[in-house]
Image 1 (cartoon, rainbow, N blue to C red):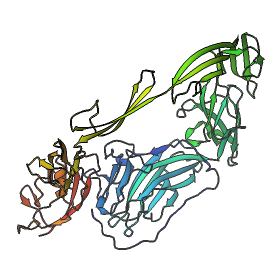
Image 2: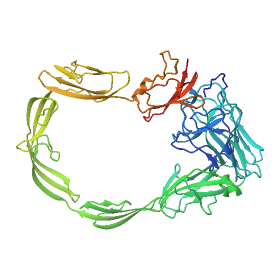
Image 3: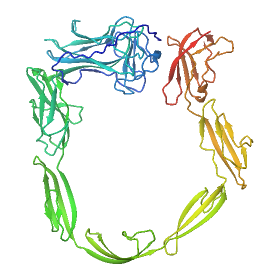
Image 4: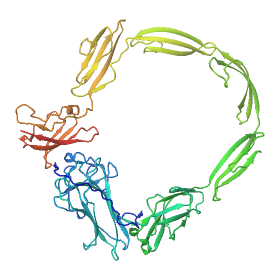
Length: 614
């Protein structure tokens, strides 16, 4: 609903860091509530046990005490952000909350299978939906409790400030499970009342084990990538922040960076790979406190390191050299005689990286002579004048070919002519005015260049088909000629278009030549502006209907009007008959109503409010 704002709150931005140690690396989230994704604007409701609020799907703007699962919001109450989920995914759902008048629980879930003495992070991305300062700001308490309700740790976001432009913020708390505690309840509680504000977006709620900062690498490799031809000789080393009394190590491997498997017996700070076949492998190190290592809910993970095991390359080369030359193999060997040679190149680790088989042929030089003729302006092997030349080329066998050329240069010829035709006729295949150069062949076999200066009488166009918006006009002007005849038998040298249709003109020039052209004018995709926000259906003949002139260009548009309680009071496909402020023939009371206009042209629906005044 529309919410007036009467007072301002101070700005507060909170950055939480409960622990200074054991928080450098994240594990696999035990809870990862993203709310999913989909093409429909509304997503499914979350389980009733996870919230004390009610699900709303009547419109994309939930009322007080309700929540919706949406992939975008637009135009709510005239004060909310137009928004997608915090990752920017246009199909990603997030939870939109219009808080209840009394403080309540937004999200509650039980987490089982934990390890005592282990640090966890409870986090969520949150945004204040308002983009106008004032009113009540969301204020949320993150709470971690025993299953009997005993509170273990809390964190209060404080009033969450308005951001313009819209900006999601991640709020988080870290805590360490007490001895004997393996199950907890996580809770997000609303501390502020609803009404004037206290509207928020909630996304990507996570509950994740965290541990000491752990980094793995390969000596001499930059970043997280390494290639090798030795599948069992690459050693991964780790650097683990001092945190646990006793570190538990478990190296893991994946072939798709998604599904991970423990490497049997790889439980030390370093690991030497044993890749059975060439391929792409991913490695990471799980780290936990001593005996907790076997539980994925109690361990953190290092960065991911990719190692590509490349097989030795093999190649077969057929090479040829000329007599007196030498061929160099990839390993640097020099070969001067014909035959087959096998060459092996090794890498820095002593592994074979390239095996080459070379079949070598030794060729001889060749000699030739010829006579040639070219046309003026051409070149033969770089020569442009008549004479005798000796060129050194490359023969088919790859060796020098010594060629003697007796060259003759033949001249070109040129001619020009002028011609004129009426529009629609042709001259030597040309139908448009201009200068054309034709290249013919003279008796000596060289080019004969003929230039034609062609005039077409008359030559004009009304231009391409165009679009027009309601209330606009287009001036059609073909140019200056002796006479004009338009489609409605008018004879002016121009025509003013104010409506859609097909328009044509026939013109005649001073030479007696005639021509015509046609243009089609259609309604275009005009910007819908100046939508009235009030009208007075009182029968006085003035402003009795809600008129939106620009909609006549969208005959397939749909118009929906709702009361402030979400009841539909008007529906129209096209807008030939403007709304007169009634529902099923009955006058509606004075007040504010909400509309949604869908142009059905792949643009977002237009929404807003209109007020009936009598």
